[in-house]
Length: 314
Picture (cartoon, helix red, strand yellow):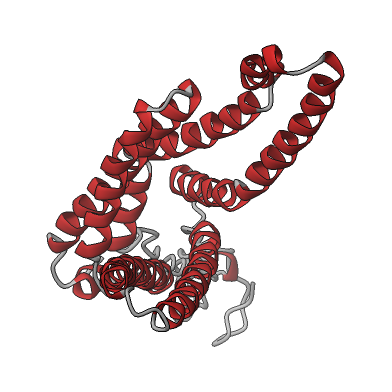
């Protein structure tokens, strides 16, 4: 290269000119010891959002897959199976023969054949109606197992409320039917009281019927209150799952009556039909188990203090 001061040729890489001593420009290839381009630092990864469920949802999921839920769910399913088997047994050939056996000594073969056909038709129709009547209970069982399935699901999906919705709709239907039955009973007793009022010597019968009417009215009132509180509690469960915070409270009235209903159903174990007795035992296991589940959930729920703060802190 040439010296920019005196213009004489100098060796490549020389720092100063050997002729005039002027400082020479550095070799462009050695001008920088650091790379011209420095890779910018990678951006920090976005914060990983917590996928943990709210405490109350964790509690509901844990309770729905615990023995407190599984045992009464199995009991309810067994009750349905035994009820169906009891219905089918009542229409079997053996049952039909047991009904006709006392009449063989008083009837001819032709009469017994006609009677057997009539009785078989009646029993079949009765069994068909009984099986149709089991449809609401079957749908409740479907809702129960849907709740269990969504609780044990480990795919990361949130809890689903379809099972609770099915059960709640069926309870609404049950409440409407109970109200209609109560209204029908009032109408019947009204006609009876009107008829007795026209008889002078019917004062004692009227008093007895009044007491019976009061007892029936109390039973219907307790039943209606039970269904109303149960529907409200189921709706609170649905909104708890949707919002992640506890909505409402567990009804002690519903829990107690559910247990009492299970205890009362043990009385069917004393009936002659084996399957009806087993259905009563299974119903007792279901009723007592679900009542205990409600009390257990209520106690666990009380241990969750400030669920909204606990969730926001995660």
